[in-house]
Amino acid sequence: MTKKLNYGFIGCGMMGQEHIKNINLIKTTNIIGIFEPNKTMREKASILAPHASHVSSINELLKIKNLDCIVIASPNNFHLEQFEQIYETRPLPLMIEKPLFIKPEDDKTISNLLVEYPEPVWVGMEYRYMPPIAHLLKNMEKVTGGVSMVSIKEHRFPFLSKVNDWNRFNKNSGGTFVEKCCHFFDLMRLITKSEAKKVMAVSGQEINHKNEIYGGMTPDIDDHGYVIIEFENGMKGMLELCMFAEGSRFQEEISVLGKSGKIEALVPGPRRFWKQKNYTQPIPQVVISPRNGETVKFLDVPVDKVLLDVGDHNGATYFQHKEFVKMLTEKLEPAVNLKDGYAAVKIALAAQKSAATGETVNMQHFF
Ligand SMILES: NC(=O)c1ccc[n+]([C@@H]2O[C@H](COP(=O)([O-])OP(=O)(O)OC[C@H]3O[C@@H](n4cnc5c(N)ncnc54)[C@H](O)[C@@H]3O)[C@@H](O)[C@H]2O)c1
Image (cartoon, rainbow, N blue to C red):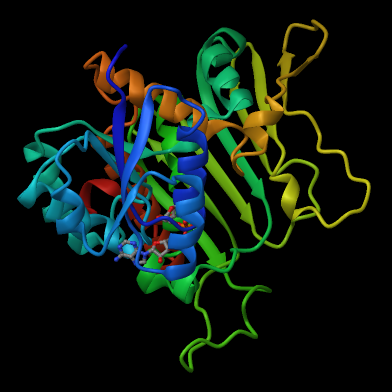
């Protein structure tokens, strides 16, 4: 029998638990240690991973001898310091939830870890693994005859409530473009095969969380905005975000265009956030629209119900862990590496800055 991969966890709230539910579907894995400071979340995690030891610090977690890898799924503002602590104590293979860091001032630390960390680090960019998006990524060159531009529209539900309300304030999350949209900047880099050269953005807090108060303070997070990016190879990208749109049939609509045609991925949001009665979740779709007069093709790309039931990300968390386990077992390189995690956040922080100042951010001179 092949040896099982022993996972440890730092943070087991909503996303940590989604990771565990998906890891549990992979027979060659165990969850053996969890550091989760919140009692309710600890209890929920215990039900999902009944054989895991619960510890009260990262140092204690790192003392578990047969640990093979760690998933960091704590709030955004802890990712970098926890990554550093692991580096200094016992570097192990890691999966770090996005965003890798949240402030331009963290550049030096993260740049150092990028070079020095001796074990593979996978950054949690689940959207690459959603079946309709994976289909688009695989077929975009053929359909477009060479990509020229990409647009991503996300119309979704407002930010959910989180443990200690960490996501209500920019100082904890990095801001909405960092917290929510680094996924989309990652996809744009993957689609254009290029780095961002210029970033322009507008954003605002129009509807959501304005009547909430935490510790005497009203949330300062944006709920909508646009970002336009010019890439070094001349390709263009655009993001449209609206977070007061949970009635939308599709949550993400991604269009990639080129000289021969257009390919689109249409991705429904999680079933549990729909308020309509008798609602049937739409099947994810890929639409192929050639320019030469050939018929438009609509392809259904369904997701297995078992996978839909163990997460909010169209099965992506499962596919990501399958690849993560394969990477560690076969000693491969991470498909989403530290450089990817870093570059996506850098674009996101540039968008935050552009929206705050009204200026276009030139990436060469932005940290
Ligand atoms: N990739 C995705 O699609 C996706 C989706 C949702 C969330 N996330 C990311 O996952 C992370 C967690 O988000 P969530 O939605 O699970 O939030 P959450 O609040 O539900 O869970 C965070 C958990 O971390 C625990 N925690 C707090 N401080 C900690 C610390 N210092 N060390 C360890 N644990 C600590 C909290 O008690 C809580 O249980 C965030 O970085 C978020 O951006 C990613």
